[in-house]
Image 1 (cartoon, rainbow, N blue to C red):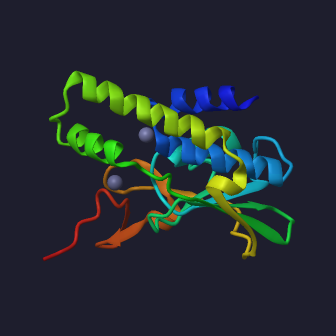
Image 2 (tube, helix red, strand yellow; image 1 turned 135 degrees about the vertical axis):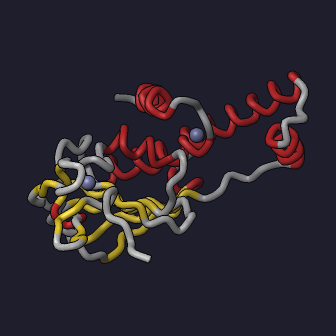
Length: 196
Ligand SMILES: [Zn+2]
Ligand SMILES: [Zn+2]
């Protein structure tokens, strides 16, 4: 898929188009190129993301690292850092997407839009500026918008499979490691109550 298609797929999944999503698209495309791989079907690629914002959705769509598969790890330091580990490789790729500079006009419009005091024209202008920022980021040379490093990192454990237990109160099944014992009964976390 080319850049435009990857962007559109990400917008479809994320629900709207925004600069934050573009951060994740850019980081994911850099990663697939540098690591010379395609979208991850299984767990051969692991992503560690240092934020839980819009861009993480693009990482899931483009790299195939997802929460459900267990090969997407969120370490929320509130940073636009995306680390990709290819299993069996010594080095991991660390990508930091630098903040895009904002000019005075955009700063003012942004404030109005978020305070819900912007007029229709101001909203339109704001969206246009955002669209330009997105296009700039997506088309910019890597080194212009990102700091890219190879780092040493310990390979995260593969996703594990646990047994299921049945809760003796509600009867529903749950993952063994999430169980509690209450009055000698095995219970799920939903049914477990702390005693006064
Ligand atoms: Zn967004
Ligand atoms: Zn229960």
